Length: 407
Image (cartoon, rainbow, N blue to C red; front, side, top):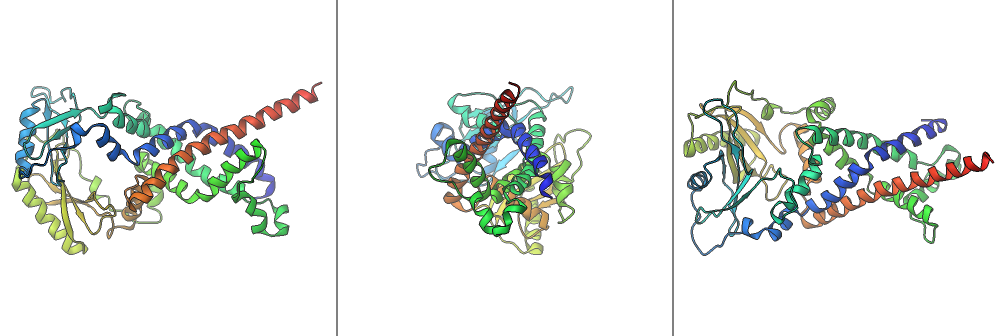
């Protein structure tokens, strides 16, 4: 890029920043809160997340699922959580029941239920897609704001995907604009670039705002790019992320490759403990061939639309300390393997993508990184606000200059 093109890139950066500022403010501030979602949600709603541990044994996972089914006859409960924590409720995802005559989904009052693993009692339920500022719905509402601005259907995710794509490209434009102009490089590139990394003391308010915007953008540039590109991955995976990344690294797409059945599966041949035994057998074989060790089970879940069971475990191939993402799909009738997902030790593209997701959601490096991710969300909002302030000041300056010339 030549110096003559710099004004054009300034305009690109300006309008890209203005177009995404509001969305990135919302994403940054909500993300700052969501870095501690589990802790905050438990603090706000202990009646849902905590169960009294009085030395009683926990119920069998399938018996607990049946207890939840009996108490919530209006929902389909196809998930069996296998990971348990003492004193913690077990969370079940709920699906709508199907009308026997039409096959259409019936209204579903809630999306998640919380059960006591000792007694089987349902402690409560909630609709995590609802727009609510009540204590029970506050964190899910913030999560929806972060994901899709609470817009219906896929529109919010698509909108955020486009914003993330513009943000990703603008990361490179913004970085280029911090580089010293060719004329300034005569005194040495690093010497000329150094002011861009600093916040000048005792500067005027406009200069201070510019320094905040530029210096924080530079110091955190790599992680801001991680968050931008991972947002493209979450929202435009098939449309943009996977086609672009597949050029440079391979992916195992079998996890998403099972086709949708003509109609949802009503009653699979494999059910209950028999389905779990088949899933364990398939996972043991995968562990032997892929060289990882399973150290805990996460869940078994029937996908009626595709006729498969998803079985998730925690293994030494996982990045996350507590959440297991090592997964396998088996046919719900035969137990045959239909797909896999390995967080690491599989296809490079899956490993890279899992790192992006884990960094975005602050699932790695413990509490220090959670705190850092929370602060980074606030910094992202600050960068958006200061960018708008810089544009507004320059706009007023241009208007004032034009007014003086017209006199």
